Length: 390
Image (cartoon, rainbow, N blue to C red; front, side):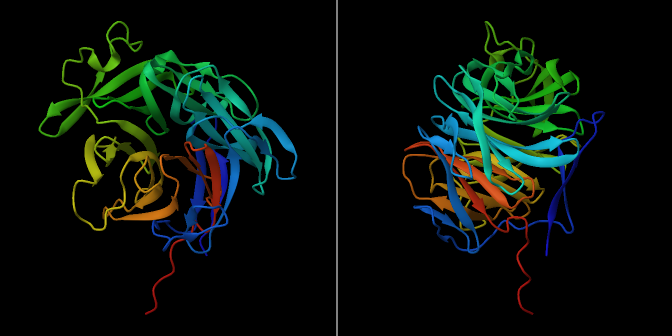
């Protein structure tokens, strides 16, 4: 049986992300035909269970039935899981969720190591349209970066372990912010912008682990399929908005940048305007399209409204849909084949914030509205499919 264990954090010198280990490579993105679960309208694969964790306007409840005192926020959007540590010992984790409204912010649900809810609280408030973000290691520990999707929006560094208020990090740039992902090998942070002509940005902190200063760059088009990076003259985006500044070469514009995730040295990100999944390889600077809904093969095509993304290994990427069939879809990067891994039959919303627990057995996500709801689906996410009979 395949098993994934939370191992450790890379030490303060490297400031890495949590390391997950497995006794064999995990490649599975197809978990079988979907079927109804105990949660109305939520369809999951065979052998999986689901539960509703939080609903907009209602108090989040602990596993023992008592209230946490935190009323779940409006429009839960991008999210992530932050392991909580006592030294090198895992004590639990927090699922962080943004609130994409005005006023916005972010909240967190805290779990113990058995997966029971122990607390919930706000970690950011008084901001606007907090859409997505990402997990970044800092000198203070692992932090959630919450991003405002407004013109000249800010990135906020948030501590999910307890109630608090995030710290704005303007050096990371001010634009229609969507998501971020930390490249712990090359000591930089990739960032998407949700505009029809949005940029793809790279922030390199002056000191890795300190987000207060650094170099902001944008991807530019050098012609003949070659891309490069150019310094953003004014990260504050005033008076000229960031993507319209003079970079010496044309910006590589992306049609509605959404989620971004890094695994095995590869940067995966989505663009909702053209329903694409992209891969950028920092080692050789190559940019490729992994999935494009406009192409007919391989068939069938399941992914539309490509939005938040979580990648766990090179050929194992999961994308949530904004609209579409309200599915989270597994993408086999090697073949381009797609497989729905869950579906929520509620019209007029979107699925957002997919993230796995540290042991890989629980998938958290939200339905954005009607009303906003946050779920957990548990099962053998971290197991490969059995070999077919010989």
